[in-house]
Image 1 (tube, rainbow, N blue to C red):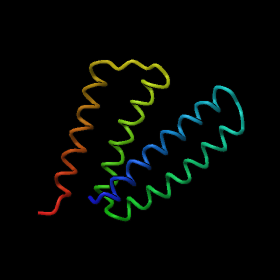
Image 2 (image 1 turned 180 degrees about the horizontal axis):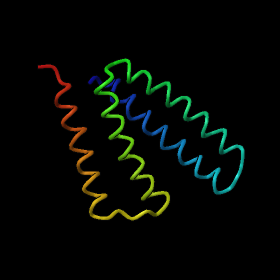
Image 3 (image 1 turned 30 degrees about the horizontal axis):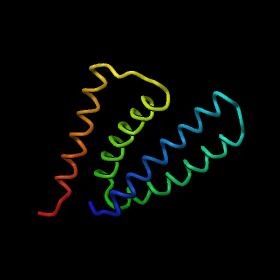
Amino acid sequence: MTTVSWLSLLSSSAGFSAGSYFLKRYADLGTLGDLGFAFTIFAVSNLIYAQILSSGLGLGVAMSSMSHLIVMSVLGVVAFGERLGHYQLGGLICALCSIWLFALSAKPA
């Protein structure tokens, strides 16, 4: 994957995380501004995600799914005080390994 693809994947994942954060705030506080921010951020993130899919469907979907898993887990721990058990940490390690292996397979021979 190219640098642009990696940056797109990172920004898409960060966008989905930010959208989820504002959606959670809307659920807690009920302010329409938070709902508007969430929808706007999700729309932009989906456009970026579509660009990722156009560069390679299988690789983009797999790496994006694992990236979202990691980013959302970190967001849950940092922003909402979630605690990760042994199984959750094992899952995150597997997700990191899968991203690394996909990245290795994407390099030209």
